[in-house]
Image (cartoon, rainbow, N blue to C red; front, side, top):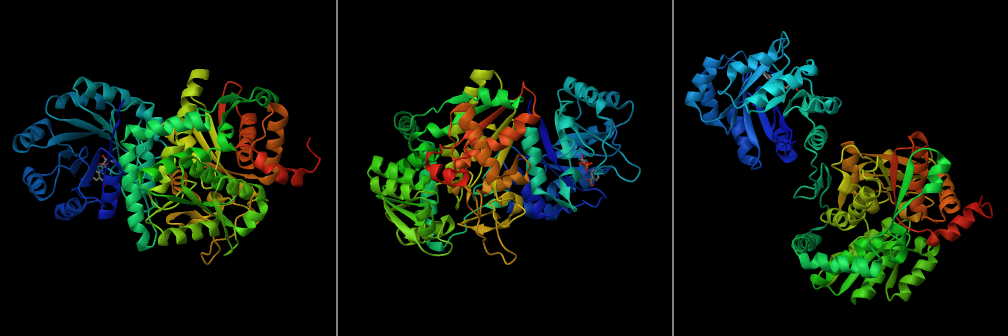
Length: 610
Ligand SMILES: O=C(O)c1ccccc1N[C@@H]1O[C@H](COP(=O)(O)O)[C@@H](O)[C@H]1O
């Protein structure tokens, strides 16, 4: 069922713009006595500045207004629907109908005989709004009525073949309860406000909950207020060129044919779904399933995106790729695809990380890449990324910057999400085939967030599936040594986009810490910040110690050595499984294998392998 949604009571251009961008079906303006009353000439200016989307309808709300005034307002601004929100009689509606072309909605204020009142308007209106009437307000009161009567109202409206919008006190907390009564439409005003202003987060959450549709980023690469393009002028052209090339390949079947062939024949996709039987039995709660990205060529999900972007670089005629790397995994994936597709490859890597990941440095060189040591700042991933961007600015003509996570300026977060979503799409199909239903909860670790967004994205509109991202709490979020960006960060700009970041009081980026080099990043992909703010995904911290315990459990009980990154997701799944019932299920994205981490693990736990 496509439930119609109306946002009412826009009082500023910003409110109106947010409503248009949310994609809501109806946008209402109050032309009656109210704190939300607006001037039609002002509304006309907003509508000129920001035209509505084609499917959207503009609604003018009136209370016992004269027909002359309604016509005057219709002549001043664009309205497709007139909402009569007072005690307008069927005769009055008939008169209005004879002089205007617009659709007419009639508000019925809920009362005991309410559903019967609807029949008085049969054949003369185009929709009903059912609202709460208080002594002092005709509408916009924020007060609900007894929703037990919603089915009777909707039944009568359905019989008349017109929609029935339920209004009065609907908000983000009670919306799911209202949806249980299956209304044909929902209308709200105060429930999408915070401090008297329309709240973008509440609007987005409402659209996602009601319409089950998620649209982000917008044309500017914004996920709500996050994302965007904060780059020097010299890179704007390169990003536009990239965006155009990406849009072109998205419509090009031959690109996806080639990509799927590489994923299958070179990387080993589809990766399996493994039921962790012994671990689940040991925990005694929900059944845990693992999506085995660790079985990809080069040992992690990173290769999904690296193959896709390298193919894109080739189509753009670029001869060289550059990449940044922290733990070395993305560096190895980039060097691998460069070798596979005959591209030159430079990998920027902090000197500190080069020491910690000596073996990966050797691997990259063996694959023919040049590894460039970065000596600025803390000499880790953040500094390597800065250096890669600096290099790109002066070599945009022949160089493709292959970003390894769902971070950076638009279109990278969107593009990486698209290429990593193969994880979630495959998982959905495999899980349905194996269990006949979707998982109750999906868990993935987040550093920059590419494996997590790839896993979550195909499930975002499946409201019954709980999505949980796990960030690195290092030595504890109460210490300074962690990488828990969403638990502890503040909004800022880093590496070309706006997101939550770890910063000190003066806004300087602070050095993150995690036992796992792949989660050791002070920012996070902008889409995760947005999904956290609209409360579609929750993010939980897991410490080094908890991750190591989980890693040992998976080794002992399933014979799988996960990457330290993925062990964070496993640790949270272990916590959750114990709290859940045996018939419930958890899907974990096992993003990579732990061979690269053996030295670190040995150093941390010594011989204490039990
Ligand atoms: O919102 C108002 O101020 C208003 C004033 C006069 C008539 C109708 C008004 N709003 C309508 O009230 C409901 C939404 O109410 P709520 O804030 O969500 O409880 C909706 O129909 C608006 O059109």
